[in-house]
Amino acid sequence: MSEDKIIDGKAFAAGLRGRVAEKVAALKAAKGVTPGLAVVLVGEDPASQVYVRNKAKQTVECGMESFEHRLSPETSQEELLALVETLNADARVHGILVQLPLPKQIDANAVINAITPAKDVDGFHVVNAGRLMTGAGKPMVPCTPLGCLMLLKDRLGDLSGKNAVVVGRSNIVGKPMAQLLLDANATVTIAHSRTADLPGVCRQADILVAAVGRPEMVKGDWVKPGATVIDVGINRIETPEGKGKLVGDVAFEEAVQVAGAITPVPGGVGPMTIACLLANCATAAYRAAGLEDPEL
Ligand code: NDP
Image (cartoon, rainbow, N blue to C red):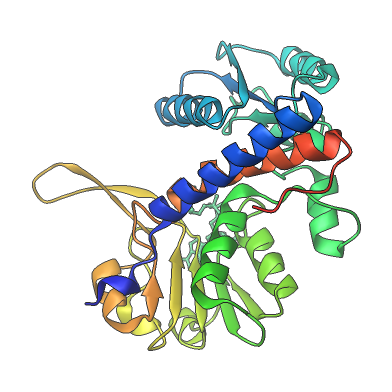
């Protein structure tokens, strides 16, 4: 296996964070504005706690302000909506992220859609989804698919005319990924749990994005020789030795033999998600200051 088949998301994300830090410093110098990111965590989900800690750390490392709000698992929807309103009105806060999943008593859609679209750095608000879908106005683009697109453009350059297959149709990954690929002039198929002959559909792909949540579902013989494979999946499995291990939605050892390029798990898409969150927050602060979007 040649090393240059591996798409190093960790290295790319580090470079992106460096560019964000430069843009943050430039904004401070030009306008005296420090971008601020507010992260809200409701409850004690261990994975969410790790994400929130990492987000706060990397926010500060990029020169931005981090505002953390940790609320009890019993928090009511009204209390959370009141906090979102406060953050919407706070001029120091340019980006608001409410960590998902939320406890059962809270309607996640109601909370997401209460965030001012300009501060919706996750890009989940219906206004941002609508802008992405229609091309009307500048959206905030969901971080994970944005990161995948950056990796694809970095590896392949122009995506025009490529056959892209996205497996998964969630609002967070699959649908916005497909839209971004369409905007980049790829010919896009969205596959899902009811797709007939999924292996055959995947074998048509020059670009194959797997965002499913099923460990190693995409096999080596589903991959077209030379295709670029982006594995969004993060699945924790037990090894025969009884240890925990992270794997993607793609059977990496098989797929890497066939693919032209592939993201590993971990170290592929994962690090791009937080880096793109920081990029979105910087972009939100530039827009709030009346400036053009920074080139990242
Ligand atoms: P969802 O569960 O919301 O969506 C999964 C999608 O996969 C659905 O559209 C579902 O189809 C489809 N699917 C499920 N089973 C099959 C199957 N057997 N064959 C074909 N399609 C199937 O997941 P997310 O989009 O939120 O996340 C997907 C994966 O990406 C997860 O592993 C998650 O952990 C990871 N992830 C990683 C991130 C990162 O930073 N790297 C960020 C976000 C997610 P249907 O609609 O028909 O049910």
